[in-house]
Image (tube, rainbow, N blue to C red; front, side, top):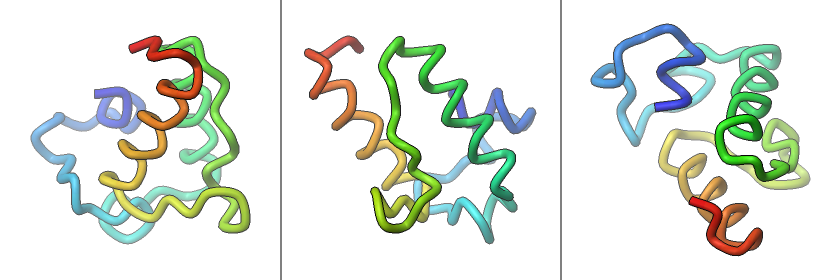
Length: 78
């Protein structure tokens, strides 16, 4: 939901297998906006998932797994 809201597109257009760069056409600025929106929504600091050397997130499914892991690490704030 955060992804669709940040991109301004209907949720049904966000497939879990969609590539963030190719499928959703996210550039580095949009990736930062999504990171900030996730932090605001869940109240948990997110690592910079735009950096390949920290946490490679290439598609929506990997983004969901990444966010869940951050929430779990923070004590299940979701």
